[in-house]
Image (cartoon, rainbow, N blue to C red; front, side, top):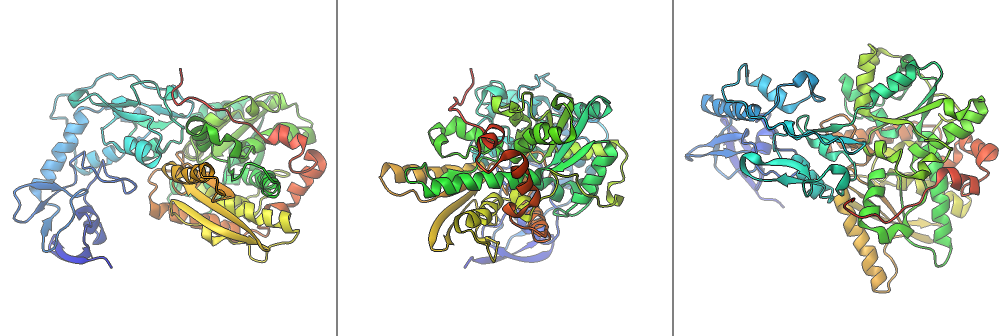
Length: 584
């Protein structure tokens, strides 16, 4: 049991666990200490100095984020001296920061801008010192503008610590310090996996998603184009935050309505393709599991950042990777083949768009020739949840008062299994619901696999399928996957049975619900609320297993033949190549 200590903050007595930071202790009693470099996902390292406080009897101001509260201490978080020091810190940061807020992608949602407003900064007392650093636009997903960087270090800690990618680092020292691609090269040449977690954690506009909304607007204005859109599972539980709703609020029906008002010709749901993914992936798993000598374990492939990471860091594990495309790309293939045939539309006249929680989806749409399975680019553009929210506002749509509407069919109906794709463990749970049916020919009485849910970095379980034991693992937040893969390698080298049969990996903490393109401000508290929204959507669906989706059955009967067929492989599967970490 943790040792508890007593202290006083601003005259308020408090009892907390020993080792609790002054910042967290203050937050517990409703006292907000300003922060800029600190983020609850990351270890505190006291870079900015805005969170300084006084401790009675100490001549020094200490940084609340990185200083543990001690028994008997009397702490003061706000007085005239502290406020003046904090204001001066903000003014010094602003002296190295551009004043182009109107053109900044974080305008109105910038932590530095908010601090400047809170401290009433109306003039610049320090000489301006800008360095005219070049903007890195080399990746199709994220843009790095080092001129706006406040050297908080969040992006570096996320990339190196949480994600274990090491694509970003501090370059030079002193006044010359800046953030850049590892080795001071362009991001596209580094091990960057385009997950966007750097941008999701950046407090300012130094790293942000590439905005493709103009491409969407142009397509909607082109009378010659039949414009089709799909929305990802995780978008429906996060978009509402951009309009003041609680995280996890399900706004699926309003999203369909907003898309119709924007002028899309057909509105589909990526969840339908998630059901299709389960049919292909579960078929692949059952085949490998029941065929002696097959490469086990099978590892899921829905996350493009994870695919990128695997090809760069673990090329020797490619034989274990599912060949199933992501739901986004499966839907894209069907739109320009199956849907085009049913509607009698030339695929060249279809403009296909996706709305995703993920910045890596922008990279995925052209990652290799498998993304051109229809004879042209299968998906023309992918935008993030943040970009979509801006489009709704630009169009003057009163989102909160929209009626709930339905998607178009045949590619709109989805099951509960599909919607939980957006949460860590969801792909695994959905696959197990259908794999059980494929192995036994029976339906599950209870379809919930709660042992693979939650925010533990690595979750493992043994599932009993009528006497057959299936060992599964779920890893999210890229830095955790190394542990799982090393377990497999060690078992193989020792000639032992591998510890798992089936593994799900998601690059972002919590899964797609906290993808790099979701509304800013993701913390574990917010992640859990979004995840709860996913499972609520699952429970409220009439059908909760992918193989029971009637439109999935129809598409195989009319077009794909059966799961794992040659046509299914041509359109719905891909392959992988071992690639170097640093591109030449």
